[in-house]
Length: 120
Image (tube, rainbow, N blue to C red; front, side, top):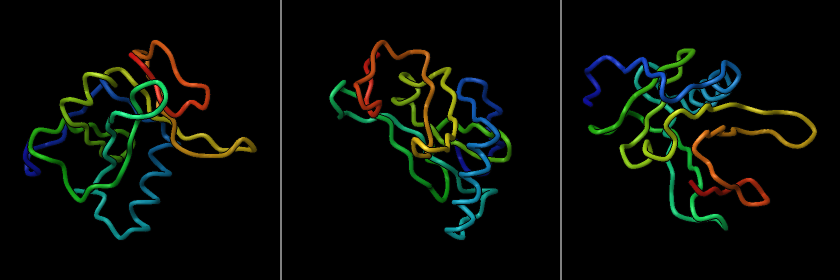
């Protein structure tokens, strides 16, 4: 998808309001244009269960990305990763046990003990 097209108002990946607010604050802290830039959510090989999530900020989507927009946050997902995270919810958790982004993935069969990797 080119950056000139309208973003997909996707329902395949959801983002909670708290996660969107945290990500947008971080994007703005990096002086990135939140109308174009977004959070890339992807799956990579690794971890004790075989697969792990990755996240980073990108200035713009890649041509073949699916773009989701929730609570003014743009989320970019490549086709290979979409196969693993379809239907997931990106959330942000804070508190005494630490804080950070967490993917609630209905496709996960098992997770490792530390919660950093998974198997579908």
